[in-house]
Image 1 (cartoon, rainbow, N blue to C red):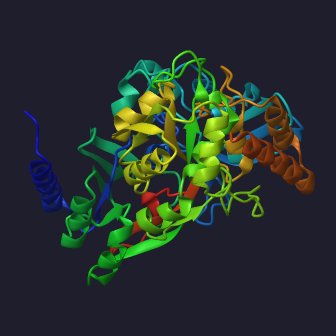
Image 2: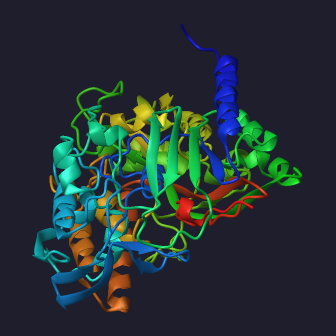
Image 3: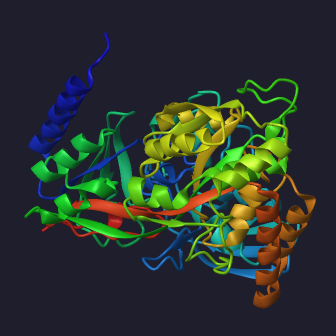
Length: 525
């Protein structure tokens, strides 16, 4: 039976109301437009996924409220040589099942990020060896000097070797293939919260870890996380008190949330850049009426698409001013951001001329893959891009879908033209260079370069940026790489979106520019 939207909304309210019945003064109810697709911390390198699982699992090195590095499962770290880092591990830490945390878990977890099915390969692809020195000391040797290694490790979560082996979860679930294992639905971390109940796409319940090694600043003892994809339903749930926190607040509803006596919208800049990618590898596109060749291999076509997109129009009409148009794949707040870089001008006539020069005066058809519940106004942005491209005679067959099916599809590279958003986990340009701008290999380089853009000079500069300790030289390498990528039109940058969380006024929490929400910092009266 097909469930109608109204029925689905009613069901959500019933579920939320039921949650409210059992809620105590220390239960916080959080709603998001999507759900974490798995409890496996290595299965999907996506902000919501890592934000949710980051309350259960922990890295060696974490982040403070100001996004500076802080000790987590490692108490200290140092470089013993240009290619070797030594980490002293925290003693007395237990996983949720009571198993002691040791160096064996670190060696196992870092190896797990590199096997088939892992979505975290780009964080560890330049590791040469991870060595156990003793029960609470490990060394990581890299292929080349790697001065930003502690930053890179901040989202690589540690799992229990024993638990994974017992539960046949020694390899990550592969979201591209729809494969699942025990780690998809159950979790056993060292973090401040445990998973008590997991109903994918319905709700997940977390409870406070009473044996947590560290301090939990907030007083919340239970978190009920509910995905609500419909914007109006999500806003109504906040305004009625059915949920205490929700995100994102649609840009058109921010004033409404702020004008309510009981709610407020917390807004701020986000470090995420939204961009478009194109298949530049296949000799013939999978989803196009052009046969026998790939128009995206021609820079003139890529540039025509870029210049046909009215980014200021998107900012004004779709984002209602809550976006920052970008000329590069990183934005302000990311180390290596180049403020002097300018976007190619919006120029339909120039775009038409480029299409004609490339041999497509009458345009062509191509499918575009977009999520409709992951980024702010993602579906509407793609609709607007499609309308823009129609002006240069390009017919976009838009395929907008929930991120639960969207990500597995595009991560298999089963796409010709797609949208993606990226927040550099290290807050450094190297992250996006390594994961998105670098030529694709089987070790994790270019893991999210889904259109297989490739410039060997950019690869060379990425390794220089990774190894260089002189700040001026390093920034010069970053600038050169970004200039090359822009000249190639390797991707089409759109904008940085703004954060907007809807919060009941009784709730205190911390909003980070990377859009992570940590339960340990949430308090109720």
